[in-house]
Length: 400
Ligand SMILES: [Zn+2]
Image (cartoon, rainbow, N blue to C red; front, top):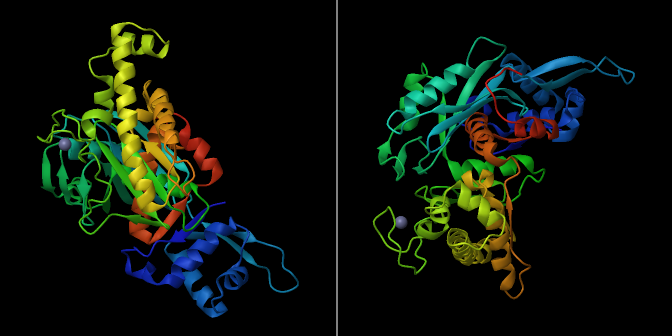
């Protein structure tokens, strides 16, 4: 069952009215089984209001008529469902490549591309090329593009700062929109995107998701009671440069940042694939011992910070997203962090646990699309069960 939840962030005038969103939500949740009268009952809105809104949504091709249902003695009831006409592209900008998927409003992946290379300086052009690969002539229109990337991103799609790329105040949304013929573009921080993808999988409208992104950088994405929490200056979750008290020099220029011990490159260090394989086999040579120490230290420092976040937010589970999820060091890192968290539970709190994001490496693509839908229509997507399994199959450039 697809659910669309009111996000109160719609940018399009016609969907700002909560009633429109309520009707759209009801149609989504009804999965093709509801007619106008049922929607009036479910939403509590007057039948005439529902009918007028349904007409508008049909005209906008956000919903469609699927055929007559049981007549229940009166006039035949015309059943309604979400339309696949409006489609959304989610893009994830990784450290060297781009992945993107085209999704319907009900969360089904229509087509994907993966491994599109970029070289840091040409990210906008590379994202534009990936979008064009997905925008070919097929049914439906691309209503909006969501892009997930590292950095502090404001509500206008300006990247205020991205250390990885050396960007400051870069108007990414505007530049990509210009590159894509004026398309509507919404940019979101990558950790926030994964948090949105986890929220999209939850059936609770007011779920809280605390996500930790571990890759070259470290960040957190927080959905608080059903709302993405970005903070007043869009810096919520910027935990990578919190002081651990250790003495390693960080790429930001300071000493002791969390990223100097708990980021993926810090854990890997100078170990090659062979050394990692020996470590995973339980070997005891110098390289394997080095990895064991670095993974242990990364886990301890992250656990310390997560305890603080757990107490601040009153959460008992953290989700891990980002490159670490698909990395060979991911499982031992997750296990060691959970062990570190279990050693010192806080009074009155159940043990805090960590798990990998449900959609793995592709969660940021789906989260970027969910962000685009949220910004465009004011609703939060809920991924249907079928779409989840489809989305977790390896992305490829082949059409479905
Ligand atoms: Zn730093």
